[in-house]
View (tube, rainbow, N blue to C red):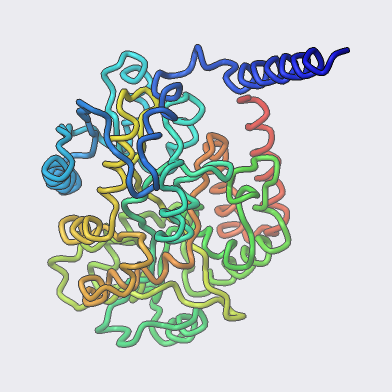
Amino acid sequence: MSKRLFIGTILSIFCMVSVLSACGKNAGTETSPPAAQGQGGQQGEAAKPGELKPEEGAQLLVWESKGQDLDYLKAVAEQFQKEYGVQVKVDAVPAIDSVKKLTTDGPAGIGADVFSAPHDQLGNAIMAGLVLENDVYDEKVKDEFMASAIEGVSNQGTLYGFPTAIDTYALFYNKSLMPEAPKTYEDIVKFAATYNDPKNKKYAFMWNVGQLYQSYSFLAGYGGYVFGNNGSDPSNIGLNNEQSVEGAKYLQSLKQILPVNTNDINDNIITGFFQEGKTAAVINGPWLQSSLTEANFEYGVAPLPLLPYGQHPVSFSGIRGLYVNSYTKYPAAAKLFASYATNKANLLKRFEMTKQLPPRNDLMDDPVITKDVNAAAFLEQAKHSTPMPSIPEMGNVWVPAGTALASLWNDNQDPAAVLNSAVDQIKTAIKTTK
């Protein structure tokens, strides 16, 4: 074989391999949303993540819940248009409904380019192919936001969202009854010994015992979890592991200071008792503050008290975020807007307008937030929180877990036995719904 023929043969083989490789990488894109096919070229204009340029003629539609959240995004949209020349229309669509609405509006080409959603809707959005990865600003976001917020807007280790707010629960306490926030649960137990009066429905401490959302803090504080791999692996359920059982045992021990069955403990009852000054401390979220505007006592908010061995209770958190619709015609402009709306200055503005906690590391010590002592307390607890799993399998967890909590609390059943039963039910439900 001549040298020329040899080189020609090698080049031919190389070209064939390249073509086959390209085909392999692009397999299936014919049925993918248009933006998913074209986003690489659209984003190629940017030399660095911070220099992403909107497409020529880009116009954006954004969905957000009505109220102060909507007012905030409208203000951001107006400023964004001035800076980048991109028209942005903001429509009122409840964040909790955006993914469901996008399942029809997205493929039809009438869905929002950027939409707001709670993080527990992310799994469904990904399964339906409705959301693009946050692949341009990913490193920037990971550096600037709280780890729990990043975890909430990610799935299987891939970042999708742009976090706008984090909420979790903490301890509200009546300062006229409890001048200092209790540092530990043992402090509450000691206080209850002199305060409790069940006949007159006076209790030192209440929380929604039969609800996994709040009681999870005890299990997770000892090292328990719902699903493994940051809540993304439904084959690894940790609600009945040794640590969860220990947490459940301690939870069960607190019935001595709250001798009330779970059927008689719900959010309305807890709020009412606290408003009336009968209960000294309760677990609740920031939303309780709106119900206390006319309370005739001063209240405080503090991170959840420490567990017996100094562990921080690990609360569930909810992460609100902005996401980019995979069917958008303008992925670069959409990602740029989502990043712009969640920068430091704009999330500080959002906090001032909505009082929702911004999960940015560089706002943790900002005077605007720290002077609001209640907000600072929730942010401190948020450091010891974990996002509720966003995978669809989480829907199979709430009822069995609640039944287990009721059994160990009301009937004093063995925590290991009731948690094992709950996990068996969860596994069965996951198998039957696949």
